[in-house]
Image (cartoon, rainbow, N blue to C red; front, side, top):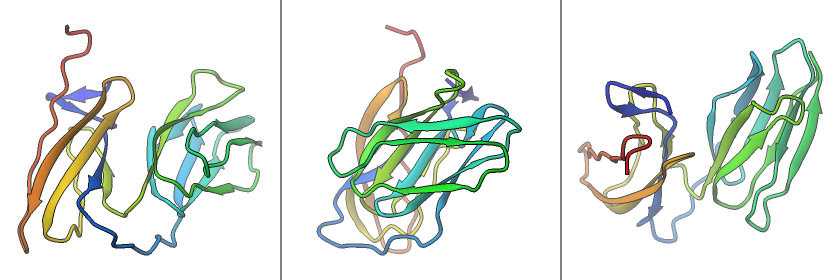
Length: 176
């Protein structure tokens, strides 16, 4: 749990529904996940379905990227990357939340990959804030998921040329 001034970091937020059958182009740039300081950076990863996720190793030791998605169509990953080895890219084609990413060599290394159906997603920053840009006017259901505290949802209406605000509230860690 990373909390600062009451804001929760590393919450994945995405538009769950309300976009209809509109399809959006997949971003050409890959999402970069680095293995640095025996950690995955970022800890919570977000990509659009079909977008490449590129794994790099900036450490002077061997690392491993091991993932077992549960949605049919998303393939398992188990790759080892030595120091200075070329980056490895993978593409996930189906939306799926909180796919655990682990290193078989260093069991404390963990991250979570999220794959969205559209380009409207974000991960909360150190202060718990997030911004999803370019959302067309309409009413949407947003999902918010934290690795330990689970999933929340809320409805938000975006007016043309306006900014919409929404807060997700999670109970304090350990609270009943």
